[in-house]
Image (cartoon, rainbow, N blue to C red; front, side, top):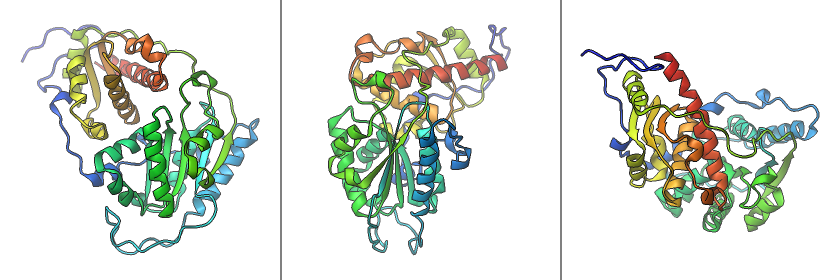
Amino acid sequence: MSSSPAPSGTGPVTDAAPLSLCAREPHVPADRLVAEMVPPPRFDSVRFSTYIPDPNQPSQTEAVKVLEGFAAGLGGPADSGRRRLFGFGRPARKTPSGPRGVYLDGGYGVGKTHLLASLWHATPAEPALKAFGTFVELTNLVGALGFQQTVQTLSGHRLLCIDEFELDDPGDTVLVSTLLGKLVDAGVALAATSNTLPGKLGEGRFAAADFLREIQGLSAHFRALRIDGEDYRHRGLPEAPPPYTDEQVTRTAHATEGASLDAFSPLLEHLARVHPSRYGALTDGIKAVCLTGVRPVPDQSTALRLVVLADRLYDREVPVMASGLPFDQLFSEEMLNGGYRKKYFRAISRLTALARDAGNLANAR
C-alpha cells in the first residue's frame, strides 16, 4: 500500500487500522472492579519518603508522621485461607477502638493524593485487602454491584482510601456515608480527601467541618489532619492547545500503534451504553486516543460521563489528540457556573494536559 505525503507533524499511514472505543462494550467481572481499586499509575511509586514537606509548613511534616503511625497500626495477622470476593469464610474481626479514619484537609497542590496513595502503599496488608478509588469510582462500584454486594465485597478489607470525596449530590453523599458506616462496623479503616462544595470553588480548600457534618454519624470515626501549604491551583480555565485538523488526527491514529480513532459525537453516545465503572476497561490497551469533531457536550448527563472518561484517561496517562473545538470549550457557561462546575474544571484541566501530551505523538511522526 502506498501512502501519500503526511501533513506536518504526522507520519505515513500504516497498514494497521486504529482501534475504536465505540466498538468496545466491555463486561467487567466484579472481582476485577474491586481489584482495580488501587492508586493510579502516576502514583505507583509515591511513598511517604518521596513527599517533600515544605519547611515553612510544619503541618505537612506532622501529617506524614501521623499517617505513618496510622498505617503501622493497621497491621496484624492476615485472614486465614484464600480471600473470597463476597466475604464468606472470613473470620470475624473485632473493631478496634478509637478513630478508624483520617481526613486530609488542605488546599490544592499540597499533595493530599500523594499522601493518600502513600498511606495505601505503607499499610501492611496485601493489595487485595486494600482499596483506593475516587468518590465517583466508589459510587460506580455500588451501581455495578449493588449496595449489599459492595458491603460484602469491601468488608474484609483493612483500608479503604477515597480521593476527592464529593458532596455535590446529596443522594450519593447519603449512599456513601451509609456504606462507610457498614464498613467501619466491619473493622475497615478509612482515609479520605475531599472536593469543594458547590459555591466554594474559589476558596481552594474544602474545610473539615463541612466534610464531618455531611458524613453525619461517621464524624466520630475520623481524625482531621490539616495540611497547610501554598495553593498551586490555577484559577479559571487552563488554556487548551489549538486542535489539529481531521486529517492530521486520522493519519496520526493510523500511524500510532495502539491508538484509537473515533468521532466525538458517536463516542458520547456510546458512553451512555457503557456503565461508568467499565470506562477503565474501555481503555484497556489504548496507547493514545484520537478524536475528530470535538464539540460542546449537549447536556449534563453526557458531560458527567465525559468527566469520568477523562479521569480514567488521565489516571492511565493516555494522550488525547483531537480536532474540532479546543477542550476549554467543551462545557457551556451554564455548566461551568452550576453545581458540578468543579468536575468540569477538573475534566478540562486533565484533558488539556493530555492534549499537550499528544504533541509528542505528532512530533514523533
